[in-house]
Length: 432
Image (cartoon, rainbow, N blue to C red; front, side):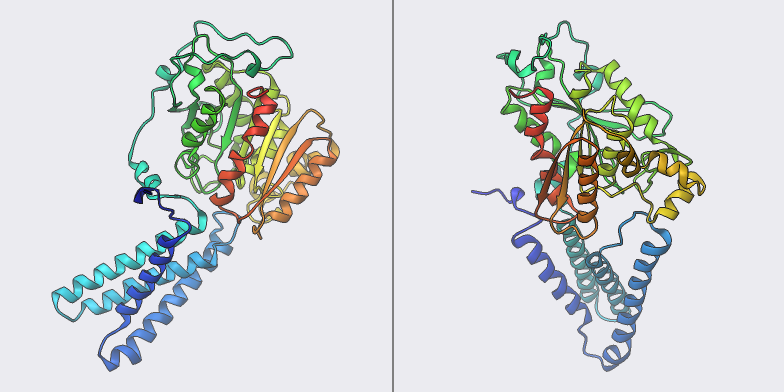
């Protein structure tokens, strides 16, 4: 029997029930036996809330612009519904008995919960109630404990693969570990989140490939563990490969949830130096890894996907592979003019020198391989992803195109990464 904790919060009955409950709660808040209420108060409140919601979307999309994409209309509608519920409840609180006031508060909570559920379903952030509950758990292990120095390592013959010589120990743990660590550098980054697969606990220890993974914007490294279900998916991969999986370091390329330093060295910060030099150096010093460039992959979704392509062309000596999941055509703060002004003080030539599409047009990368993942219904970036794919192909890269059902959300981002793991395993020696 399916546990209620494993029911989908993205598809199926829960989002539908939440939507119906929200609409009925809003209708209940609007119903009242009073002529003035219907002819004056309700129309005024509805118009005011509609104006505030429209103004909010206008400010977010054209003034504040915290991210390049416009605020989705469906989210603006639900925000307006929640605001309308609050305003109607406040108007009702001025009259009526105590139980009527309590009911009004309950109805506001129902509408708000419906709005949150709709937003979650739109982005596919938390797939099940279990994923929500895991937000309140802390299964992290101190990195000094999880990554203690190896007494011996598995030797792989030159030109060979780790999968050819690896023998799974009988006492290997079933699950990997998750740790949090501050990676110092020129860029003021938040702590990275690190996944070490079961094989890392073996003696002798294998030198494992590295996947440097990036979140989207707005976002944080933890997003790959909460919404991305990274531990669960990588543990499953490891079970199918005798405990082998890549070491995953989810680094912070943003500095703050709403920031966007563009993964460049510019007026906005030294994000490129951090990801291209300082993070890899720290990983090599702290962890037992395969240091060949062919064993290193940079990956991310949305702004993180854009960044992955940037690092693939700006640091090809470090990253031999990349996975770009629904990234942008180029690093952007909304428009080319806004981006150049904010990052380079209006110096277009400085931007052209580091912009991946311009680099791809003038240089070749025959030793780099990548996967570009697009959402079939992603009206924002599907065409841009196709253009990036073509530019990479013309630059000599060994690139694979994946198009998945869905839009610009976790319903594409999760499978975009995990469906690429067999390709990654073959590239990095984790499979024969």
